[in-house]
Length: 315
Image 1 (cartoon, rainbow, N blue to C red):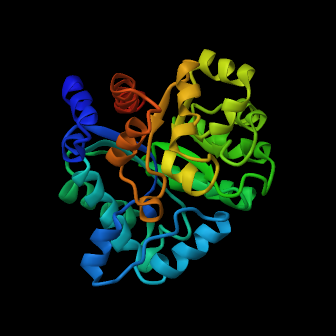
Image 2: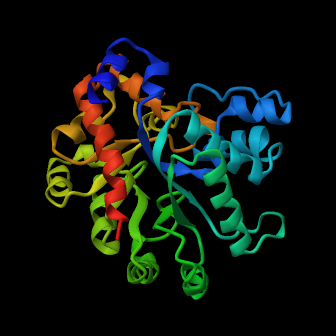
């Protein structure tokens, strides 16, 4: 399998890369499907996004007009599992929030969980699905905390995340939520260090006792923090196309995943929002190889790091 994956990369064989098991550990499930699938299923013509976005606001505006208003949540969730099956995603850690996504069509939490389990079993039975509970950085922390016991009592969620604009409120405000999540045995993650600083990454890891960081590429600007992350084995779930299209980095060739990897930080390669950035996990691997960022052996090592994620959740 390892040699095959490396050979497929060296031959730029995308269909071959797709045939090899991979993980996607930074995936927003409502944006995790493929545009082609949704276009075909709903008979929609969806224009591709621009090569780069001016900001997160610009990205959200594009998504709202082209996808959100035209494609129901439940169809987008279905599309995400179809994508996981098509791209041979063995481990899928995918996030969604409580209000916007868990009240689809009047569903209660039980009904929603049943629907997601059905998608997993019927569409992507070979994919280990790890549901991730996500909170907006701008949320009312006390309100979310007040209903957390009820939500976590279903013993379905495997991890927790904060996403959204990084400076909307201090990361330390979420400590109560993260302490509660830790009591339930959830793996602790947060979006940080995408648009912020390396110091923001270290602060978030320390304040919330994070196991993983979604993005975290700003860490590459600090030798000290890269060494600190490596020493503490903090995994960074990196999304190269997202970084390029949001102009966090200039291009694939200069992506800091190279620097992070060289410092011994465990990194993984992921899609973030496939419906927006339009690059599958397989394409992300091939992009990094084609642009000379990583060699085939290194990319296979990263693939193995992602698949080992399941070890954190086994009894």
